[in-house]
Image 1 (tube, helix red, strand yellow):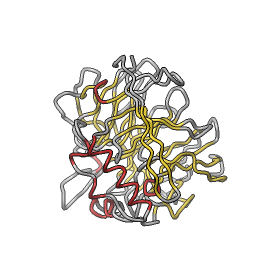
Image 2 (cartoon, rainbow, N blue to C red):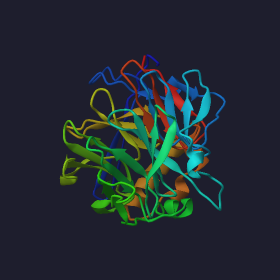
Image 3 (cartoon, one colour):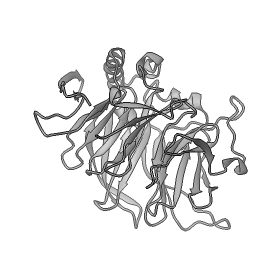
Image 4 (cartoon, rainbow, N blue to C red):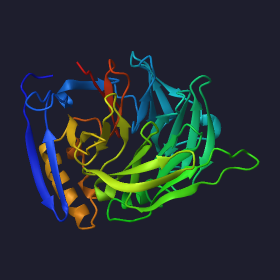
Length: 358
């Protein structure tokens, strides 16, 4: 990282909403010793862009990555950069052959015991569970509409978000053209089997494009990205009963997407429209930009997008190639490992951005 610290704030006001965005290229030594990075601190990984729509992923203890890949369902990336299909999705009839068949592996998360990977398909509505030990996958639920993100809690229940009532990519992005309050958070109880499959329960409905979420069982909190409301919601959660309560707005950030809890306990949230990752203090709601790949065009698009969302309008047409700048694709998430491991910036392109924390 550069030794020159550049900190500036962009304040822009829309009705009932103020965003204060602090952008820094490295350590904010003038305030709280925060660490932040920009695109110059990273490099494409793997270098030859062998991936397809690497929206999200997880890191194993040895540094191996497992990421969403539209061709295979999931792809495994060795630390050497070698890429190979993972999970044998083909055995389940998985295919991506548009326009006849559209598949969109999206949210990718480890189970609490770190033995399995849960993958949500945002086009087909399927939720998969892949074994790390056997490199095999089972279909655990097929939802009527696309599933954005799915996570398993310690009871075995699967929680998942439906962004909108979409059955294909076109309808999904149509929900970015205007506010449609048909987003839902569901919970699939752990009791189902093939003879008596579990039926998902509606936990929360009426959301404006429900996106990524995180369950912090230690603090008994659930955080959720409501993308078309530019906010992160916070709830008290009881995983034993599957209930949430005490809804509050933790933070306001533009178009929140996937999220993960960092090693320091802060919530990292991707913002596609701003091409940035925010770090949020879950106690105070204070946020700052921890990874910045924003371009000048991207800043203008973000400001316009926030203005439009504030008026109930959409921003899909603002998602242009110019918005991503030198990123492989539209920024959608992050992959976080141990303290001494690099983190990776996920996106809708053909490679990740690998960022060393040093």
